[in-house]
Length: 287
Length: 330
Image 1 (cartoon, each protein chain N blue to C red):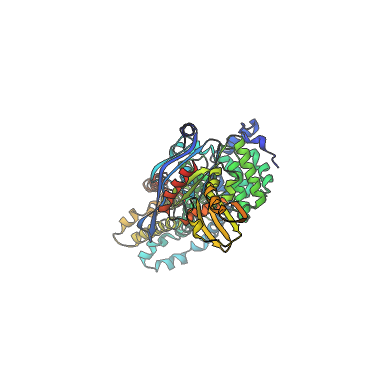
Image 2 (image 1 turned 90 degrees about the vertical axis):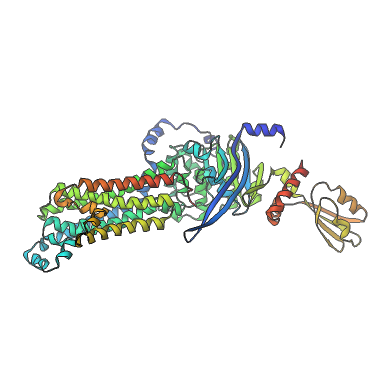
């Protein structure tokens, strides 16, 4: 039975294994997390692209004179609040269906849940223990898991963005590719910011439910504040403090990248991440 | 401890804790209501190359100590050192030299056991990847099965294998044999012996004494966050004493045996005296010699029983008794 007694003494790995090592050990944590997520990421990407395609396919039937007449009869505040005032234009339709509603809603569900799970969830269920006691620093562990979160959301946003890029011109939506890219970038930053808050709360506390709650709460606040701000007279400030406003307030589908808004979103990501890291490096794990 | 052994220990101590204290915050409904003290001044010294048993009931502080050594928990007060550095300062470099088996081994996911082991090897820069196959074979672990479909025993095999894979110089094993069937426990013990033969140090916890006494040279008994006894297994066995039964030709009065030094738990039924004997049997034999002895039985008590003694005595009295035992022993 004692087949491997000789192998006990640590010996340098053979040269060919060294080659595999150098390649296979770069970002081992992030790779593993993404590997675990590969099925769900694939399904989500396909679903998001399909939903986007489905909605865009309705656009030709919406962009008619009759539809504009129907819309004209609705209250103005509601129209502008929901972004329906421009629904018959390509960019307006894209914003009120995909970029301003379905995409953020679905991506937030994925992103906030993933953010809460990737540290706090795995810490609570104990599966972080072997990783945390391996020769990996807490900082590396956290940053690699964050990288996996970022990359996962990037893949999903890319799937959605590519579907839009391909279909919008085909359906005559008259939105430039540059603006679609700008809006997709904003979408990614917005969802990433909310997911990062959830991730950071989980990193700071180790409590998955709390991380979920804070992430979801902030996302709901962001959406509500922006929507109410648009509808209410003198409510501009609500949109100004809302991360959702930072994303869509500058009308990226017609105006391109909103430098200030996007910078605020990126800043929120960095601040949340650093705060989470600071606490994660000091606290007890798995208690 | 003699001066010589103290000096030798200071020269090559792999794990050292001094006055280690750990409080957990006990929160109810999110409000802090106080602290629970898990470790209450724990002093420990594990020497290079030995197999050290860390014994105590559940909740005594074994896993807390171990998780401090691996820098998962940070001590409230006191000092801990592993392989020459505090766990926080040593960081990944020290953990690279440790093989660790968690007490509560949780593994999920649909990845296979082989993939998980490969992943853990990658976290160690690839060290030990060639041993996954042989060790899995040795323990009869199917590497192609998804982790979440594994039984508790099979998960424990994965845990044991990953701890030994990279042939670490220090093995910290929290309840290593729980969930392993007797045959695999033997296999595990063989692996521990091979590791120590190659110079590894093994620090293993258990709440079952018998599984540690076979392999450990020294044993510490931890109770309510403190070490209440620390000895080599032979001395512990000596302290454990013997269960003596004497049968006489005539009925015996209990009070004749009650006051003999070193004799406890005297129980007299008709012609028979049963008692617990610690130390020399001389006084007991002389008392017995006053009568006609028909039968004499003296059995080594299982360390298990000694272990129980420690739980029976409230913590306060225990320190006094433990010290006394040590004095008798030397």
